[in-house]
Length: 296
Ligand code: OOG
Ligand code: NI
Image 1 (spheres, protein in one colour):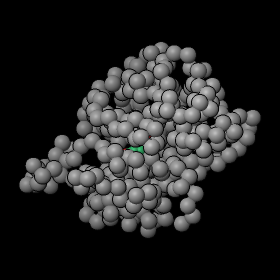
Image 2 (tube, helix red, strand yellow):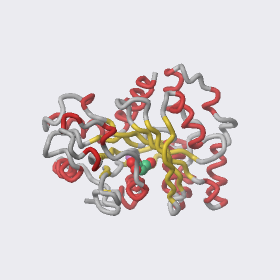
Image 3 (cartoon, protein in one colour):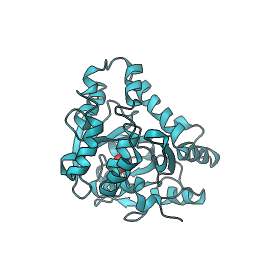
Image 4 (cartoon, rainbow, N blue to C red):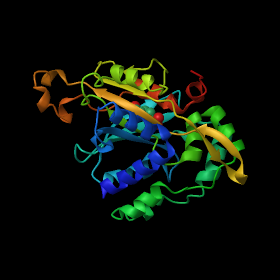
């Protein structure tokens, strides 16, 4: 069930984001892994519109049904976002990070634009889904929800919230998956080393706040590629290049209490858990123009 839904998400994401296959291919060529399945997926992330019938309260029901547990809340005042992370039912599944735009905090004009789309969804669509039917859930996660936006609306939203513009076009498309680096072979098992490998292969990294985002406790290190531009078709067939999705990399250090464990005995529960608001705040910018428009 859960496996089918996650596979469906990864499949669509790979088709749309060339960097996914490119990173995996480079890892295989380098001899770090033998096949794509050897990658440990630290977490996946979704973005949502915070309106009553949608947002986190709606989307989370799918994953709570599959046994995920809601964990900590994070608030991003300047970006007008809230987010939560969800712990998986078993360690072979990725964590989930779901964020939500605080639509009510935007200007009246931006709220009106957003509502003109989201009101097409008259009641919480997840309530109408049979969550035990993984094919139906898969279809839902890749359905349009609302009409194709106009370029004009996209641009008006982007001027106020790049996150809003991203969601109005991309909806529930996977925003990223995350390569867990700490279990990779020596030479690649830190974010610093993995970044060197990525840059050697020509991948561009998000440098907002520095290429390595480090939690204050020094135990969670993250980096991310800059989302590539995709040519998107808007209402009336108009074309516009917009930011797609990206790939993230995470290193979770072993907690001090388990520092003495032999390497072969270290499991997920021995490492730093959760997320970090300061890291996340900068990772969001992987789809923001300040990163995607940079030329080198
Ligand atoms: C999510 C950014 C935050 C993390 O791991 O902290 C994040 C997003 O861009 O939607 O992924
Ligand atoms: Ni992430």
